Image (cartoon, rainbow, N blue to C red; front, top):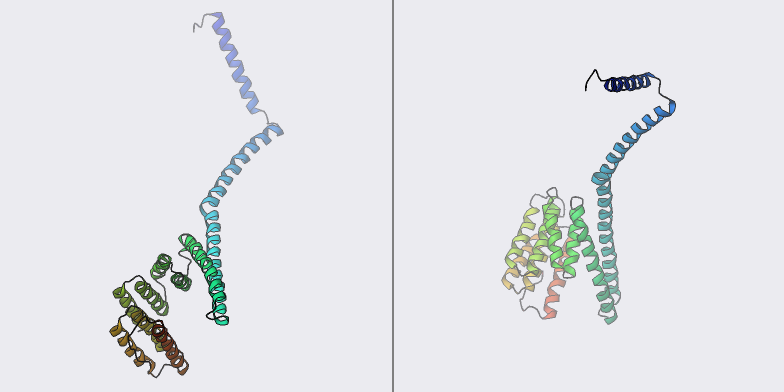
Length: 281
C-alpha cells in the first residue's frame, strides 16, 4: 500500500475509526439484556455439561443397577414359583396317590417348573454375585427332578465357585454334584463327590451332625443300588449302620433315617430294578 496515495490514507483512517468505535463500545457498561444473554449462554453450557454427567451416570451406574435389581427379583420370583408348584404337586400326590388324574395334573405342572428354571438360569448371568448357595442348590435339585441336567450342572458350578460357603453348604453342594454325576453315568465321579461331601462335615461337631452324615450315605447307597453296584451298596449300608449307632444321633433322627432308608430300598425291590440283598437295619 502506497502511503502517499490519497485513497490509501482514507482507508487507513477508516480502519482506525472502526477500531476506536469498538474499543469505546467495550468500555461502555453492558445492557441488562446483553448480560442476560451472556449468563444464559454460560448456564446453558453448565447445564449441558451437568446433563452429560447425569446421562453418563445413568448409563454406567444407575441403569445397570436398576437392571440388576430387576434380574434379582425375577430370579427370586422364579424360585418362589417353583416352590409353590412343587408344594402343589406333593399335595396332589398325597391326596390322590396312584391316581391317573393326579399323574395328569403333575405332568401338566412339570413344564411350568422347567420354564421357571430356564427363567432363573437366564437371570443368573446378571446377578451371579448375588445368588446364594441355598438358592442355587434348590434350583439344581429341581432341575434334576425334571430331567434338566444341563441346568443343574450350571447351578451347581456357580454354587461351587462361592468361596464363603459354610462346611454344611459345601457338603450339600458335593452331595448334589455326586447325585448329578451318577445321573449322567459317571459312577466313579459320583462316588468321589459323595466322599467329598462326607469329608466336608469332618470339621463339624454340632449335636446331630451324624444324622446329616447318615442322610448323605442313604443318598449314596440309593444311587449304587440304582446302577446295580451291589457290593458298593452293601458297604454304604455298613457305613449307615455305624453312623446311626453313634451316641450323638438323636432318637428322632435315627427313626427318620431308618424309615427313609427302608423306603428307598423297598422302592428298588418292588420295581424289580435290583436283586441286590441289602439287609435293612
